[in-house]
Amino acid sequence: MKTKIKIFLLTIMFISASVAAQNPSKPANPFGLVYGGAITENVNGKVNIHPVTYKLNGIDISANIYTPANYDPSKKHPAIVVAHPNGGVKEQVAGLYAQRLAESGYVAIVADASYQGASGGQPRNVDKPANRIEDIRGMADFITHYQGVNANQLGLLGICGGGGYSLKAAQTDKRFKAVVTLSMFNSGEVRRNGFMNSGLSTIQERLKEATEARALEAAGGKILYASDTEITDEMADKMPFDLYREGHYYYHRTHAHPNSTFRFTMSSLLDLMEFDVTTNMDLINQPLLMMAGSKADTYYMTDSAFKLATGTKEKELFLIPGATHIQTYYVPEYVNRAVGKLNEFFGKYL
Image 1 (cartoon, rainbow, N blue to C red):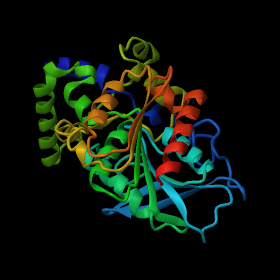
Image 2 (image 1 turned 90 degrees about the vertical axis):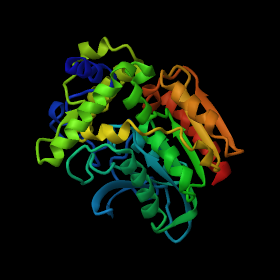
Image 3 (image 1 turned 180 degrees about the vertical axis):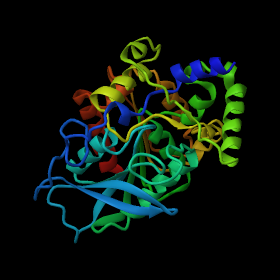
């Protein structure tokens, strides 16, 4: 049965070797950014990037703040919190959208999740929903006190897993006046049931394995990790889902970053598998925009959450024609479509 569980985790849960092992050198960009059109230097009169570090529940959080061209800290500007995908870091797709938002006049913040990326926390790669939701609140704490930001004009953009956690954060945190998700991923549902319910038969076995990992940690033993196996291109090509196949190439080849890894502590599954984005969706009373690629195999998660968002009178589902989940991260045509919609939505509600 353990072999069966390992095979399931291999094919379903974005298993990969540490990207750092595959890409030991630092990205060429001076800010570590790996997306197309990234800022390479701060120039007066243009969008600038400001690396910052702040404390959140005793943990050092590594973040980047993007300020718009001709930013005047003596004036008040609207701001956007951007939450990155599972396994991702601030230098990838979240940074791309933060930069594009700054180009549109917003102050944008994107931070590495606690225990992940360049942020602190031990053991490494703990991946618990409560932490990710708190990370989003922490970004709001920091950016609403940043010089030149209007705390009453705060928006939220969550991408992939960050989209799911953004929905949970917005259910209770009303500092967010407008909420957007892109290619939303319900981490709890997938970790519990498998992608497209492909892991229903192994739920109890995986919970047992996570329980044993927790017990081992409590006894001072080795930290066990899921999604810690190297994936080759050949293996990726045989994966049945676009999300994982294209994700392999995005995260490990075209947009790889040393801090980005999909491994997570096995004990995290105890928290992940009891979590579900769609509970309490009726608590969202802010304007809500949910965006997804029309060809995304993850669309069913966006559709489910959107239908349950009955507490807001201002909600919109926006499909990006022809795009898969991962393609919304970097393909210029699809990114431009998404950014155009973001500008329209935040321009109306912030």
